[in-house]
Image (cartoon, rainbow, N blue to C red; front, side, top):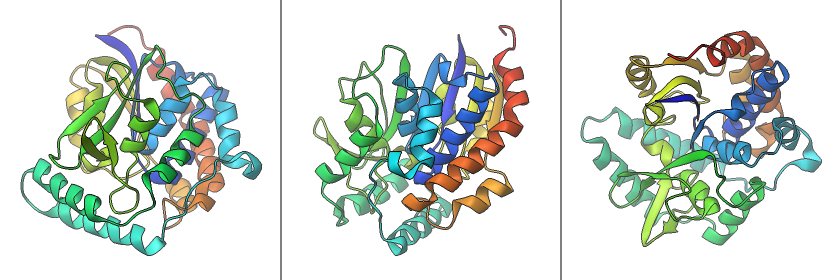
Length: 280
């Protein structure tokens, strides 16, 4: 069994900024969770996990969220389309049935949607990542096959380019184009679960950052807790207020990151206790 896993959930640009703020505060308080034995990222969390694995100090990553001159160029999707996607997804998730079949429905919608060109979107993802090669440490990102609805976990042994893997994990259906990899088309890993915490099974201590509500998370954590100590950080009232209504709006980055930093300061003691537990 491994020791420490850091699980980073999805949440758009808001999620990237908030998670980065939380991590920066934890680092400032002496909790180096970026040095986890396993980094698992979904959607926004895939971006943050890849950034952490580059070795760039989290203080630098925080600056890239809060200082306008250092922020990455991002595309701004139509707010109405974002709201439509969120409403459609919530309706689908409320329907009974096989989750993979529901994901196939979302995949079909994604494949037929008119979006920006894939090359344009890929350039944005590449700009987010300090390094474009997989690190030697354990890093995995989650995506979903748009045709089959099946989950795909990309890592350094998958033979897939890191930028493409992160782009696939971040491919919000109907907003961003599905990503072609090895003859398949992939969409956002959040279509399986916003956090996918169950994929960190086998680690003794698991820290979860969950920017978005995930109906699957409670059951996933219950299963993890059978063999691990688990700590969850999700947005408090102050962070939620900073997020605004559109999680993909680039203007939310600085306020979301600062709110995450403040929340990370408050969570530092509990996280430090988790990270310093003796082997289970």
